Every structure is written in structure tokens, then in C-alpha cells.
Image (cartoon, rainbow, N blue to C red; front, side, top):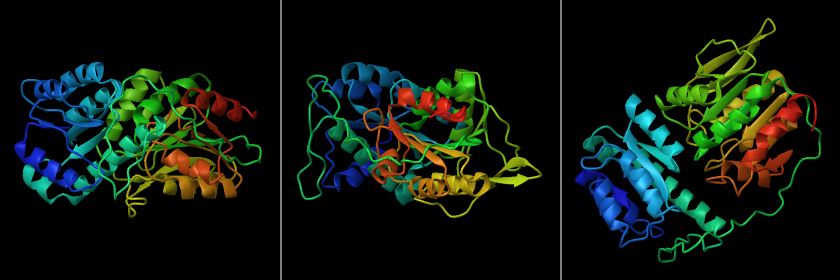
Length: 362
């Protein structure tokens, strides 16, 4: 279902998505109230929900939608403004699965291929992850679109026991975290779990556009009590603090005189992302050697796979979130299936494992 007050955007998105044989548009709505009415006669798996709409905006509609269809995946859609970044992150704390930044004008939307590609990728990734959890058929390009109605809670399928590395973890000097789809919520829980024992600097790459990363850092600070900030070029790393890679910049680390500093760059995107996890992990391995602890949280794609391999080959340690607790098990699944992880754990257990490794345990 597409919910947007712009008829131009509804029409464009309907054409884009409808051209994919794996996607079926079951409804479109001009505001939140129309969407709620449409839910009485349709059963969408994914809802793309605009934020700014008359009658009922997206943030007001979101909890109402989830109360009617608790298993539907909602993707918030908004233009890149500071206010909309705040609203989008708040929406994810209320249960939205993801967000997609929308070009500012209808003309920009029409010409934006990146917006088209991103919305299709996110819709398919979220739907396939949900289908896999529920044991339902996955998308196949040659098939007619598959739809389902969730009549009751079904126990998520757990992936086979993942391959893990045998080497014992080295006591780290830095923690690097990578995340994407579902990452803001996962980061909140993870950081809360490590805050009481955190003595090391934590660097985070979360796939986000500019303006969103600064708001994310503020949300993490308020929720956890830790100093969490958007990274700046030349900033000295301090133990017990969390640094978020800013949108549109890769984060790297350098050493000078026994101190460590953040270096930002706009090298080409990797895995279609900037910031990306791979260059951050490579930098951490180069500077800290085996004393790196990398954590891969929920996210689509395979960003972090190549960087995790570099860390492990350098003697460092990788942990990953498990499939059952991930919104999308793309990034953590990739490192798990490659056999690069010391452990693959539910989100609720990752912080505890990190705390143990940091003090020299297992």
C-alpha cells in the first residue's frame, strides 16, 4: 500500500513497483485516514507511509495501522529535513521497520533513479525477511506475486546453527558496529546494554543520509546517558563514547602520538553506501590489528562482509545478530554464512557478550 498526499508520487510509485513481477500494489491512499479505511478491505505486507499529509499525517497513522495490522512492515517516506529526520526516527521507535528519504520536489522524484531503486530494494528485502521468518514462499521473479494473511502469531524459523571461527577473542581496544535496516532500534538496545561497562570508544556506521545521523546520535545520547555524537573529521577518540559516521561520509581512524583520531572522507560509495561498514572495518584493522571487536547488526545487503574478513584475518573478532531478532538478516547473515563470526547471538545477548570480551573473557 502506498500512502502519500501527492497524486504524482502515488502514481509514479505504483508504476515503478507494479513493473516488478514480485510486487503487487493492493491499495493507495492520500492520507492516513484513507489508509486506515483501506485496511478494512486489503491486507498489505508492506506500507510506504508519507509523513506530511493533511487530515491524518504518517506519525499519527502509524500506531493506528500497527494496532490493526501488527505484522505489517511500514516504511516511512520523507524529504531530507531535520524535522522529518526526527519524525522518521521517532516513527521507528514506534514500530516502523525502515525509512526512505524522498526527493524534495515532484520533479526530483520523477528523475531520481536512486529513490526508485532504494524503495524497491527495501520493500522486497523486508517482505522476504518476513516470509522467511514465517516459513512462507520467497519471491521468484517468474511467479505471480505471492501474498499472505497472518491469522495468528507463528513462531519464527531459526536459521541453522551458523559456522563460527575457533580462535579466541583478543581483548579489544575499539568496538566497531555496522547496521542498516532496523539498525536504529537495534543500536538503541545494544548501546543500552554496554553503557554501564563501556571503557572503549565505539564507532558506528549506520546506513543513513545526512541530517539523520546527527539526530540518531542525539536520540542515543538521551536514551542511554552515554555521550553519543556525530563524528567530525579530526575528532579524538575517547573511551566510553559512541561516534556515528555522518551521512555521505565514510569513517576511518588514524593514530598519531599514541592517540587515535577520526578521519572522514568522501571516497566512492561501497556496496552502494556512503557511509559504508567495509571501509570503516578495514581502517580499524589497519590501525588496531587484532585488538578490534566488530559487531554486525540487522541490515539488508552484505556491507561489512569484506571488512569483517579483513578483521578476522588480522586476528580480530566479529559478532553478529541472529536471524530471529533481525529485521533483515542480510548483513549479519552474510558474515555468519561466511564463517567469520566468533558468535551469532540474539540482540538481547550481544551486549553481554561484548562486555565479557572487553574485560578479557569469552
